[in-house]
Length: 387
Image (cartoon, rainbow, N blue to C red; front, side, top):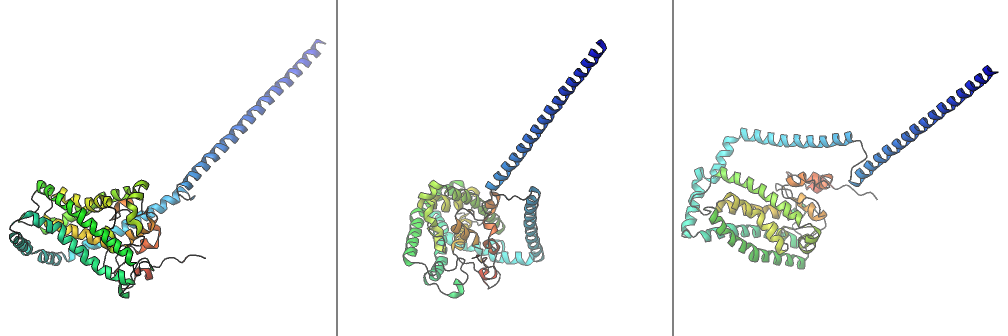
């Protein structure tokens, strides 16, 4: 009897142990399943978060490897193009170095003889009056250059003729011809900026340049030094213009200052100086003035630099992509879209990615030197909109 009870107790104990073990396994499996479900949900939630964030930032849902490969391919294409251009330039320069150097020296004058003699004559004619020489070089000659070029463009803008020029218009159907009242307002504003803002700033610039060095010395700089200076002046202007220009696109400053310049969504040449007085001082005058002051440039170099800066600004605003002239597509697109292409050279726009939209357009494909008589708007037309 006792043995039977012991056997019964052992069986009961075994069943209890089985229940405990089975319960433990069930709980363990449930916990693992719960953990697995929670982990899966967490991973899926986290993945969804990153995907939605990427969408908000404008990225596609393609794998990172594909996107990175695409970006690397674009960078590599840019590098190859730059290498081809530089390599071709070096090859041509090496092949024709002696001839090119001879012609450049002839233009500048062997050892500066020709231009040096002209400068000495001008220096003597004004009896060494450095203020007059500085005023002529930094104000009169650049201003005359500006109005000679813009005078020719204004004839086309005001009449819409000849068709030989208007066929190169970037924005077809705009300013063809320009409204007379709007054009007169632009000219009045430009004249005000030149005579009541540019002139006083040039007068202030002279004593600063005099303090920095001898801007009106009787000896002209060498041709090679002038070329080197122009490169540095262009880079300095790019830096100061880009950031001052982008600053004026801040909503507060744009509303009260920069909006005036953007009244022209399809710009013309004279509009390059059509702006609010504050903008004219900060963006049109200071960026090109900083370089000559910093480099202690001769007034002859400053005269050449100011004239080139005004000419390039006119071309970038003219609205015509003419053969053999720098492309105005970059800045014309800025007037069209406002928040793209802030700089002059495009270097800082590429660095800060403020030309992304521009690089996806046909205008970017047309942003090149036109070497034929066929307008790029015809050879590279805009894509037809789907109905």
